[in-house]
Image: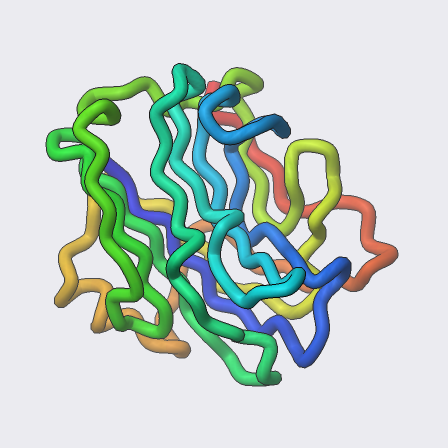
Length: 178
């Protein structure tokens, strides 16, 4: 089980109208690449279809039907929880539940990335860069409760790292799960 939390301000525009807040999944079609990603998609829509839990064996959870346009110049907090015992994933936007989905095929699934890396602000190839400000990014080894998620405020402190970059920034925060 886990929770991924990101505090950010995407500004009023974003590179290519899509971005990744967190990625531990390589690039490829849903159902084919093991890992987790949290991202927003704004091409013809404003939804969280770039948020995906994938076992690489055809079993996924995606949040395409969680609609919200967060390109408003304000600070936001997004949290993704996953309970490995139940296969339930929940996406919270600014402390409120946006969508919960259960896939019983993901109970006990191996979601470790095949490359053993996690990234904040970029996808596996360095694309879909987040171009705003992100801070207090956290990864918890448990699925936080709704009350714990609601307590996450814009001024909460995290435990992973802070970064700020623009379109020409060539990195992201990358760490290893190995």
